[in-house]
Image 1 (spheres, rainbow, N blue to C red):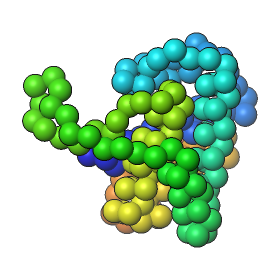
Image 2: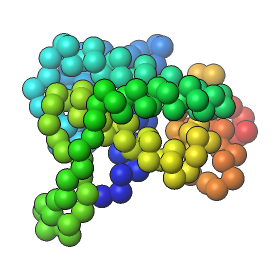
Image 3: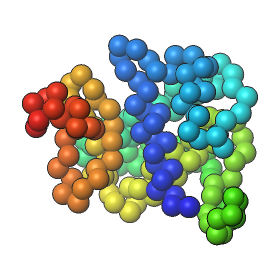
Image 4: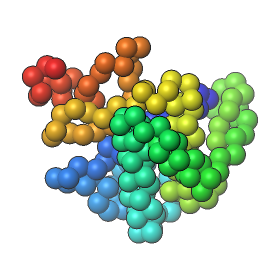
Length: 168
């Protein structure tokens, strides 16, 4: 498995925050977030919900530091997450796929989510650099995203936001 793919967990979680309506408002919304990641599903408590909200804030702070050019602060935050949520890789050949690398899945749902998100973000930054991270320029949005093009000139998280801002 491509460990960079775990970085998608960062975008999925951080972009649940909207000042108008928090998309991570209750246990049902947390379950909805996790439906695309069945390996992360498990018994959820309100403590898990609070832990996921805290993780969301920490990940946003890391991305914002990176976008602001504060690499040391971004690395410090990410390293702290990696220490608190250690990752243990394991070989797997599930569902008829060839042997490939996965992250082990033990601990609470927030711990597993944090370990995967932190590892994926660390690998992404290691491979593509801090400037691979972006913050939508639309004042109504402010979602985070990963730059997809080589020139890193992308200003918006989506075509919708770019059009809303006049196609900039």
